[in-house]
Length: 354
Image 1 (spheres, rainbow, N blue to C red):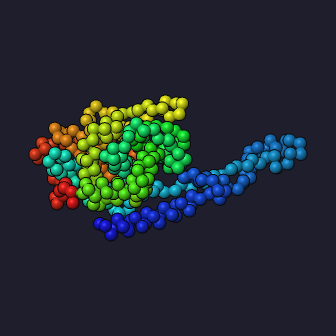
Image 2: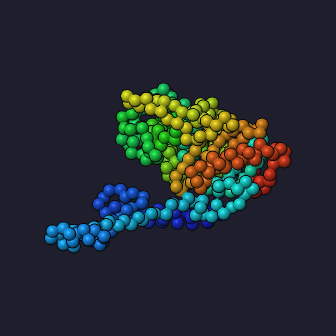
Image 3: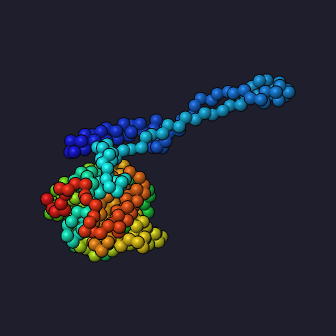
């Protein structure tokens, strides 16, 4: 499995280079994902030629109409590392769209469902859960006002970001936006303002992972934008269990929305996980994530079927499929007597720090 994933990572990197070169524009501006090229003009004779013959000295040129032809070249969608490694070919009893899944009883460590739970993959913004844990346990002042610098504002914002250079929010507000709205610039700023700077923060992230037994995990930055931030479902379940011990992280990650002052405006931010607004779910902690290399990801601590459960879904292959997979698991658990649950795919799986 490690050899396949390593080979897939190399293939992904090569594919990224090719796509990057293909996307470079001739005039120096960024190219759109679907490039449109205009073909040379072509004269086409039309029925207007009869009318043209009646016009004085108009000749046949007035009877010609030029037509622009366009050729649309569409780039193929990027594949996740899990897809390249063939993990989506793994079948499971629930027909999940996520290539990796793990459901664990938080109190007893009993594994209720497992699918490729030891596979090490990019984790996207699930990274921010470790970012928040390190900031919280460092005891940094949450009421300290932090200013977004041009360095912070240069961080890719995802769909969009209201945190432009010069914006001033408290560390607590930045923590809230990083967890709830998955704000990349807020997460980056939290790392940059850590004592000792970014390098010390990343070292603290990796140190915390090791102390939790997350030995298959590696962090290189605090946002999750890098595909080099990697972990397994087993390790992320350990992270969720540790983070859920902090009431602040539970509260901030599950709030449906928040309005914060950004400059002279009051800006509304919404939770990236729509399940927190669903009354059928009782979610204690959550985090979503997405980059192309990771697919759609979701981790949660939730109360289901009378148990406190940890749920990890990685590398889901559709915009809404991770939510659909979570619903499948909830329905399945609700229908089962938990003493007679469906067998896990990997009977050797145990949820214990390694």
